[in-house]
Every structure is written in structure tokens, then in C-alpha cells.
Length: 151
Image 1 (cartoon, one colour):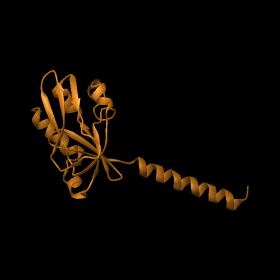
Image 2 (cartoon, rainbow, N blue to C red; image 1 turned 90 degrees about the horizontal axis):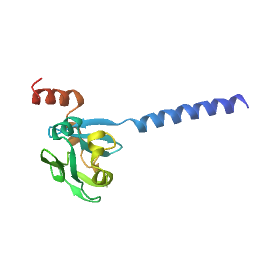
Image 3 (tube, one colour; image 1 turned 135 degrees about the horizontal axis):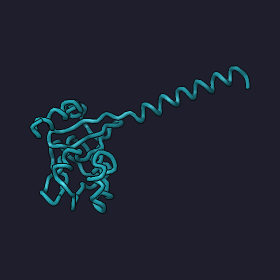
């Protein structure tokens, strides 16, 4: 292999590694109503936080929004019912719902086991970066939950 081909190959690998790292980077935000939002390439994946699922207890019913639904900030888009109570799910961002996690409607325990991963509820292609910027970061959300739990 010539030096030129080897250099080109190494450069291509380095660029590919950077692109993969950039694609895998996501920003996580929170709402005061205990939804989390993972932002990646203009799409927010949304679910309830671990704090919320702990407060609710065992989840017994979940209603998620349908794909292709237009939503505004704070629209009620679903419901989570537990043995303790029922809570509305609010959209933290304006935009269009692009996907719903039907798995959580069939297996509600996913939310209790993995609320901020496998237990996601829906994805929205958001229309306003300002709305994203107005959400809580991890430190602010932690402070909120500490205040609510009296810590």
C-alpha cells in the first residue's frame, strides 16, 4: 500500500469516527412536569423521568400520541396511570409527532424498569430552538426534584 493510500485511509477513518461521535451526541433536557427530552438532529425523544415513575409507582396503563399529530408546547398528548394516580403527559415542544413507542402500551413495566431509555413515549420533530433552550438542564432539574422532595 502506498503512503498516499495509507494516509487517505487513516484520514477517512478519523473523519468517520468524528461523524459517528457527533451523531451519537444528544442533549438531554427536562420539564418542571417531569418529562425528559433527548434532543438529537432536530428530534426530541420524550418520556417521564425516573423521579416521576418513582412517585407514580407501578405503571398499569399508558396512552401515547399518534404519529403525524401536530402539537404545541404544553398540549396534553397522553396519559400514564399507576396504582397510585393518573398523570397527563405534556408535550415539552411544538412540532410534529414522528413516532410513538407502542411497546410501552403493551408492556407498561418498561417505564418502571427503564423510564429514561427503553420506556420513552414519543418523538417530536420540533419547530423552535427557543423552546428547547427554555427547558431545564440536568442541574436545574436535580435542584427542582430536591426542592420537591424536601432535600
